[in-house]
Amino acid sequence: MIKYLVVYEKTKTGYSAYVPDIPGVIATGKTKPIVEKNIFGAIQFHLEGLKEEKLRIPKSQADSEVLVFAI
Figure 1 (cartoon, rainbow, N blue to C red):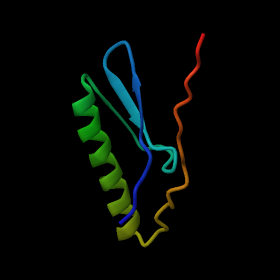
Figure 2 (figure 1 turned 60 degrees about the horizontal axis):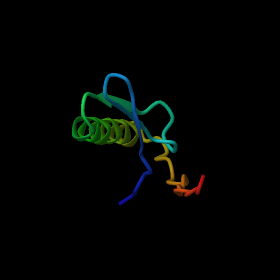
Figure 3 (figure 1 turned 90 degrees about the vertical axis):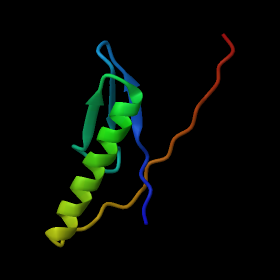
Figure 4 (figure 1 turned 30 degrees about the vertical axis):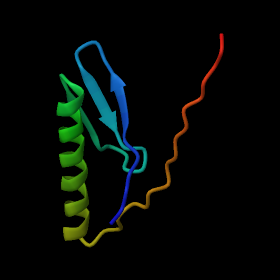
């Protein structure tokens, strides 16, 4: 089992998501639950394709942190 960091961004028309450890895997959706479902499917589809082609599965290396500023 492997875990990947997913970054969600609010856009003018909904949400977008991407996976820093898997370049090119992105998703969009009108709501966050929709984009969450879409990015999960995109990751799964990509990893299954890599496995089928006997290519290397990317390691999870991305990390994140929320910084708080008092301004």
